[in-house]
Image (cartoon, rainbow, N blue to C red; front, side):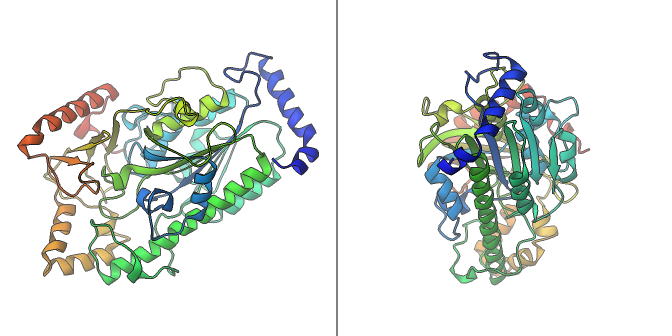
Length: 455
């Protein structure tokens, strides 16, 4: 907060402190320790690939606002979502629970009504809780109990402008917990792009065709839109809320490319995550701690002063942010179950620091998604044409369509997860160990596998 802002808003800040203390009793606010609770703003990008962000080594797409956040706070290299599909991922965020426990395992599904959700926790701590833009999954956001919500339908791209304007108009003395969700870079990607298709670097999992490169340029423009939106919200939050601000940026899962969204490969489940909190988090710091989206609710609650245990699968990583610990999780568990009739291919996975194990529950079925059946069909057809005469393209197409029962990847040697080691005898011990962990996790969360039916 600038000196000018301090001079013009002393009454508002004093009133905020008075109301908070009056509501809960001096010294009785859990975990606040007589400090003013921070305002909390979470910015969510939609379908953003981790590797496409410049803060994570991406070289093709300019993301200057992510870079700005990284200079102000801590960047995580190993953050993961609970599911590589929109609704289950966001349900995990808003409940702190794995999908099998929250009831949201399929896309367009929502948590069970009896599950306590994000707004209820913060309202109990005296917060205003708002959501503008895609927070849950379109119209379902009204079921979560936010004090204010708007612009939650598909690609309401004026949502960021609305969020900035709402924030500027807000006069409440209560601390604020605000979630802003941009639809970028979710499809449909912009028709026009400032990026040269020929200059873009394609991941090894993609088939290089003129149509693929054209679509890649459009995706790059969509990522730039997300970064622009991030900057607008960050600037507005700093201007309105001042220095007592806990600001987080992340993405709900990977981008809508083959082997990304709707997959348990890192391109589907690994997400950007940056946290900024002045005088609490060292600027320009980085963490290799493994954290999950189920950890975000407990983390934000601890920042707000909540000291209860909560019925969470996640746990707070505040000790990581404050430099008290370096490690958080030993394993990350993820699940994908389906997304309507476009995408019925259930899988479960566990990821350690160095290994990834994926179990495909119905390997006799062909793998299909919107990519080869809907929005991206234009470039997928170019892959099929090239595969007729190009063995490398044919291998990628077949790998997309046909999945084995088990997959095992040595992430240290093969970070792009290209060589499946599940049938290699020398790796049988690690495969069996990780398979056992998936069994135990499914049993502990009540995941019934193929018996889980789409609502």
